[in-house]
View 1 (cartoon, rainbow, N blue to C red):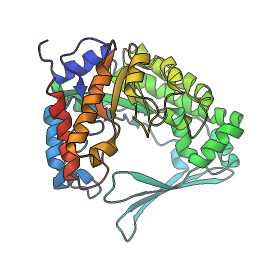
View 2 (view 1 turned 90 degrees about the horizontal axis):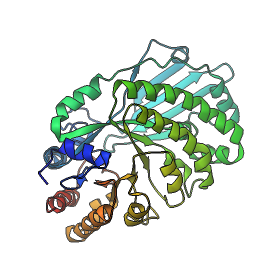
View 3 (view 1 turned 135 degrees about the horizontal axis):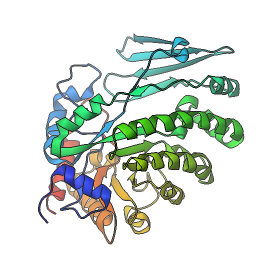
View 4 (view 1 turned 180 degrees about the vertical axis):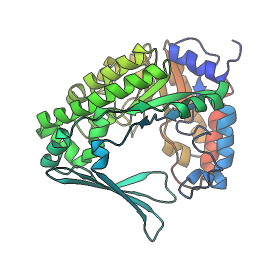
Length: 379
């Protein structure tokens, strides 16, 4: 088969059409989001150790750039009740405290971002008990505003034929988990089911409006829906996936399909007992299909059971990229390609399960990323 452009390869994969070789994506690493010229001290990718990898990403990978679409609206009643305080501690970490002044209580959350780690730590969850969740549910539903798609469209122009954008949204379970924190999330899901579902329904009504507006303005794109992993072992029993995820996410997938888009379901961890429910959402793909011991089902088994309907994205474990010697890691890459492409299937994208989050990229990690490209180019 004649060589495809990287964009052509990815779109053919999503449609279930033949490709010249499996696509390879380095997940969050896209060479645009990680601009190494960005001088922001919290931008870890301006460390010189990242430059060779980002060059490799731009030149050799089938790039999928995640895009979160902001909404523009006039200050709402909730905005007027919200107060945000930002400050830095002695170690240089950036703190953000948010207060929402309600009629019966004040909700408060606190996050921290460290200089050398690309993640945000939640030090205090926004909602801490049933009374606060009830007060949050009673808040009036606000106008969501208008999607601002300019950055996504600009990103597509920059990519050209080297890749595609991927629109993304958390689902209702994801947003509720982030409001409650894991302890209250699990307790309420098991013991306060009516309250829990009322909160989910409030979030879902907003998400449905947002997704339909974005999908209508940007039809035919790939989407990532994240959050279902909160409802899998060891956190919650699989039956609750059907109760708290299936119907909600199926509605989002249907909206994406209404505008000819493709929905990829993102969920880490132990998937074996929930994959039937995941497939029942009608999604077009799943990621990252983690190998044991982080997951509990092989890429081969997922291909055999669901590969005719789903594009599989995975499943190179980030721990292996960071820790294995190159000869051992090469065998892992070869195995993933073999399992992800064997027999009949809609499509496969070779992809890590996550990305490094430290400021300085280790030399072994760089070499293993290079090994991924070396192996895929043999095909």
